[in-house]
Amino acid sequence: MIELSAIHKSFGGTPVLRGVTLSVPKGESCVIIGGSGTGKSVTIKCVLGLAMPDSGTIRVDGQDVTRTDRDAFLARFGMLFQGAALFDSMPVWQNVAFRLLRGTLKRPRREAREIAIEKLRRVGLRPDVADLYPAELSGGMQKRVGLARAIAAEPQIIFFDEPTTGLDPIMAGVINDLIREIVTEMGVTAVTITHDMSSVRAIADSVAMLHDGVIKWHGPVSRLDDSGDPYLDQFVNGRAEGPIEAVR
Amino acid sequence: MSWLARLGRAVIGVLAAIGRVAIFAGAAIGHIVRPPFYFREFGHALLAIGYFSLPVVGLTAFFTGGALALQIYAGGARFSAESVVPSIVAIGMVRELGPVLGGLMVAGRVAAAIAAEIGTMKVTEQIDALVTLSTNPMKYLTAPRVLAATLVLPVLVAVGDSIGVLGGFVVGVARLDFNAQAYLENTVDFLELWDVLSGLVKASVFGFIVALMGCYHGMNSGRGAQGVGRATTNAVVSASVLILAANFLLTEAFFSA
Image (cartoon, rainbow over all chains, first blue to last red; front, side, top):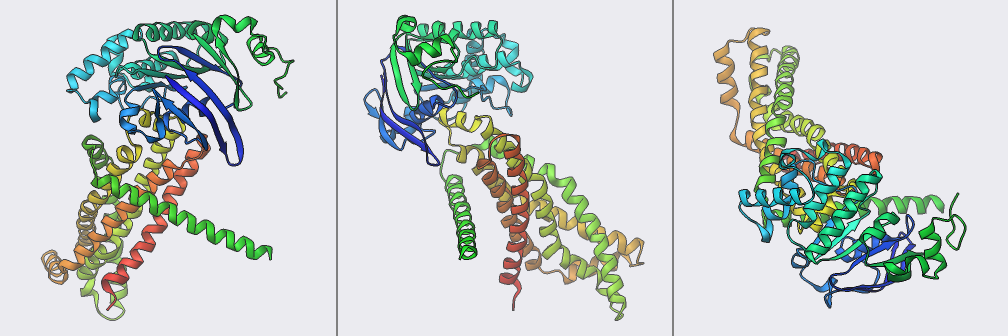
């Protein structure tokens, strides 16, 4: 269970989050949607401790994230970054097995490599990809490796930051399906941020719409098309006219 | 009064920057002495900073030693003191030119490489990824590089010193008609242990400065290609200036009677 309560965050005097309140029950896949620059990334960075909220509380399973042992806390998380954020100085398998090669989850190298290859297979990559370097992979393959790295240490919570940005529609569909399958089969709590509506329909159990630094609407994905919320309606249908001002 | 305000803001800006670097240096040292230790990263850093800098430091030292021999010979000839060439070349190399030029060459090569690598990692969210994988970037990226540079630069400079003396020897024997054996005897007789050690202590401090500046500017890199470019430039410039300033202070501390 992830609970955000009245999160405020400003950068250089410009408020980005103005009281975000959201709860994601255990095992649910919540997708946060919203235009560019509305603070979607900042919200999950606050949960992970990559950014400190100015005020408000974030609890994961009832524990305040600012007052907990960070290593143990982060060991329960997996994260897929927008650009995959693979370490380009090491081969693919070492990227996937990063957590398993050092720190508290350290395993023998051979075992870590085997787990990495198994995870690569899970995301649809052949074992011979393991020894390539990230720069040798296409965008879609990098996303898959990023996904394999996120699930390598069997996390309980996974964050996906714009998982389909920069991919062609077919590859985006493949990644969406993979995410949905992995979330269901691992039984994890998932939070995805995106502005790609095909991702929303494929991945989400519940949808939260972030606009102007607050959650404007939060509800089940089945209510997406008859929410009655003008902000959500405009976003879902991609209309230029509506309460959300489009800069032209 | 606006110029006074501007001056004040500039002074506060400089002091704040010094404070930030000092805090960063303190954190780096803290992570060097506290586990976990990343031996593999440390090994990579030793290789990248030390071994791969050998050619550039060696060539610099060789030509500098040769030029030094020619200069000292020409200067010494004005008052019939040509015989001081071997000893002055050796003293000049090990005390001053070896560490300073070695430090500056490594600053150009290593500080730039570190800043560009870490800066790119920051821009592409790899630093954030490290954090989410329960790895402290200061411990994983900064500590091994700073420790490696601090330890390996004295070794690099010791090799450079020897090559510099060799450069002087080659020029002395081939161009200035010195007797080879007499040149070597002169070099060894007049060189004191402290001459060499003081140069190596300097080298160690310069190594610390080079890696620290590379890591600091990389970690604080701005966005995009321009941000990384600026971080790289700032790393080389600040490392070079700090090396020259530290060299003056260390020389003052070691040799002012």
